Length: 338
Length: 198
Image (cartoon, rainbow over all chains, first blue to last red; front, side):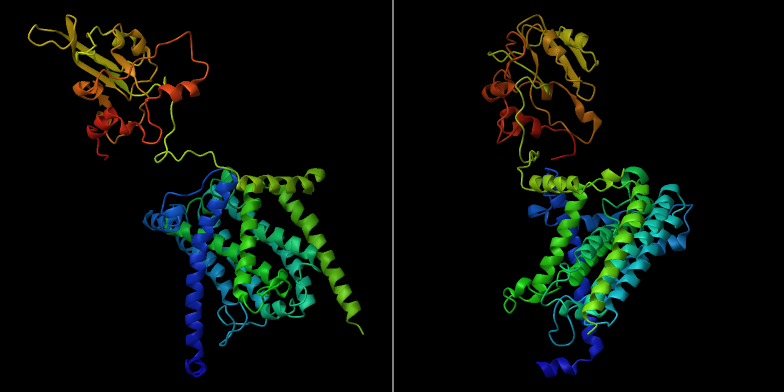
């Protein structure tokens, strides 16, 4: 078996793995959407979608078919090239992140994930994630109408201010792990998960992650009650669908990242059954809990007012994150000095 | 503002509330498969009743058409002949049409009728694809000859019954599990639906 694996060229293995991960991620997106609608429904005393298939399980398929058959409009006032390009920027960035996210320990032929244990994995994630903002900004800007423009202006400001605090909160973890490789960070958490020493960083990460993915209560970019649909007001059909996919993929990404950085990745809690239950189960379970939390958050809290959002980001989150970083650095410097 | 922004306890109260709702019983009535039982006086689709001997109650007096605030009813009366008797009196309704799109289901026709011929039933599922299908003529309004006299109008006791739910249980014409379709008249109306649907 090992000979067989070794005889296959590496690029083919990576290609196959990428294909599998892509398929799994897209399916996860589809059911994350259904999951969100169900959970939101239950929390709002509704049954949620239950007409398509048993328990509404075929709802994602119905939605996909609907998206595909809708007309793809381009407004006269739009800048056609950028308008058509923007959803792809969003989606490609959202998908690209999964290239470096390890789902489990190595099982021969690299990590699960796609096998790329990039030594600067976390930096790659943030870099690609930041480019994704361009998708939203350009979409709003090129639509050539008022509401999308307002949405994109908001997204630019919101993303920049919250990304700072997010990065700051993560640096504490990097200092503790002494590496920017995601696998190394997980390995460093075998004894104690980082959300315990980095509880402040963890909370700040949770808050900023919601803002980064444009979800309620930080969904000012879409803000359907004020801005119609925000940046995607003018989009329809598949292009709108791409933004939708990108949003959910980003949600999955930040959930995975939170798991990797703060909740010990694929490590079993307190080493329970660590030999029996494969690490990927723990990983998916933890990421799933995060997804649930984000949905829970959306049903519970109303949207922030824009000036308060900015106040909160710049005057509270960023200073606290910086302070957390300084204290962490000082403690590490002090304890490892001898 | 500062106080509101950092009121963390309130946020957790909110989380607890939504989480407890997550497990609550949902009040949704899943309509097409489960049907709500209406009060017996629910104003739905009309029906023209008969006497026990099978004769039509309607005498073509047009009082319902006059009472109708929405001008939804058209009645054209005609004389009964000794050979062809439709109603016990001198006249009967040669044509009787109600435009259910105009109708506001106020029940004034029912009150105006001197012979209790026109009554409102609890049936409400009249959706159709064509406007023309909403003009109900005698073929769909009149109780079929082999189906008895039709829904009795309310006895109208002193005012509105105190407990409509209780009365509904006793008197509702709709079988809660099977829906109105299960009654003979419901079946007839379904088979004679004029639109494109089912």
